[in-house]
Image (cartoon, rainbow, N blue to C red; front, side, top):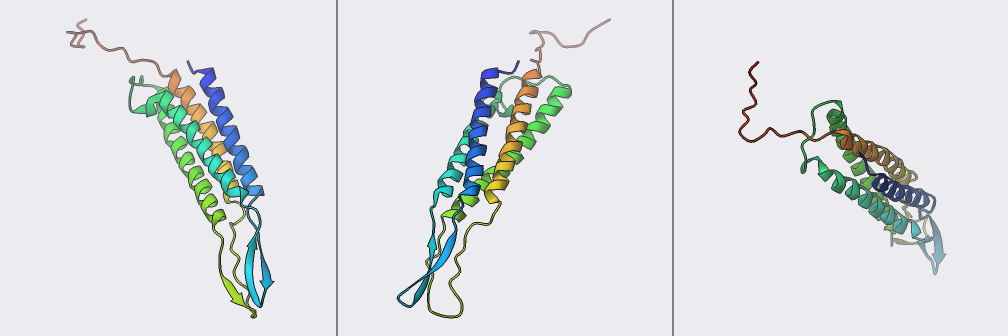
Length: 179
């Protein structure tokens, strides 16, 4: 039986991670070109999206670690009983990790790119400096994959908990039955 406390805890962590990713998308850095003493340079606004992205990254990681610790990552602990639940648990396990990896890459890359500020200066000329900023949608993509990861990881845990213990044969039993 799936632990309701574990599912609620993971849901709260995933909800926090999703909220932080959406907030990071709305608070991305923007830049403008400023002129001072015959030089043009880039001026960036607040850098809060980087911290929000890293926070989202960490909350999602903790959520995934909790689910994987509870299920022993399918590689340790009890054997899974053959059947439909085992097939679904394995498929959801793989899908959960793929969505998790994509979400983490989006959040990490978005945070790193948002923190990068060009230091390029030019003398007054026809071409202003390139004030590069993070593309719109990187943190949003991370938020979408956080949502997918949350659904897939909770479904994985519920199907994993439905698979029963495989009963081990008694000592000395050869497993061959005679009619």
